Length: 190
Image 1 (cartoon, helix red, strand yellow):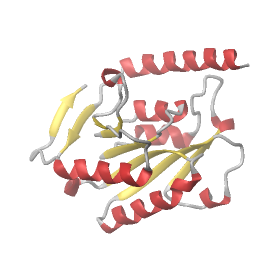
Image 2 (tube, one colour; image 1 turned 90 degrees about the vertical axis):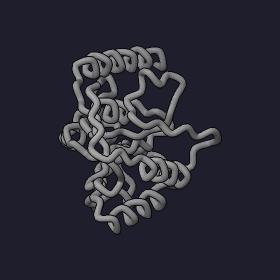
Image 3 (cartoon, one colour; image 1 turned 180 degrees about the vertical axis):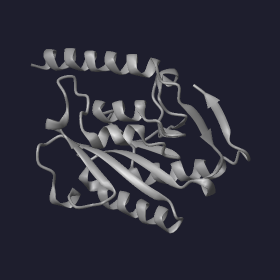
Image 4 (cartoon, helix red, strand yellow; image 1 turned 60 degrees about the vertical axis):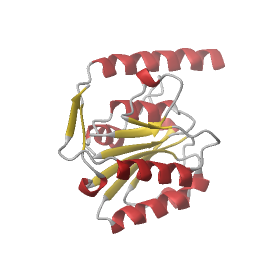
């Protein structure tokens, strides 16, 4: 069974690499004070992180920044705490195609939304979320660094030496975004 899952995942990665090769996204960022909306990709199987994530959203709302979260929950029924939240949509296991690619209108809409910043909180590299982050049309993408930075979909990579804690990670993301002050938009064709 694991062998078939690995083959399906390899095909999913192949499909992703083909779609990424056609991507001509323009990277742009000025500074955090210019940000109007943030998209967050989150592994919703880590429900213990939800209070921290909610606190982060409240901080962003105080700054006048709208936040939209898309999560992946590996079950078929969402926990009650994830339902009826306007800023959160979750993809469930039964909303993936045979190659683990999300096939929901929410995922498609999230990918095509030009967020000012996309923050990837997918510490375990769950493929459906990695697919969304990789194809996102966000202006600037932030995520964890890995051992193949040249293949990373992220424009800013945060390196966390120890085990990753969501509070520390979000603090680091904001810290580095506040440090970057490029004046007029930095625009890079990628």
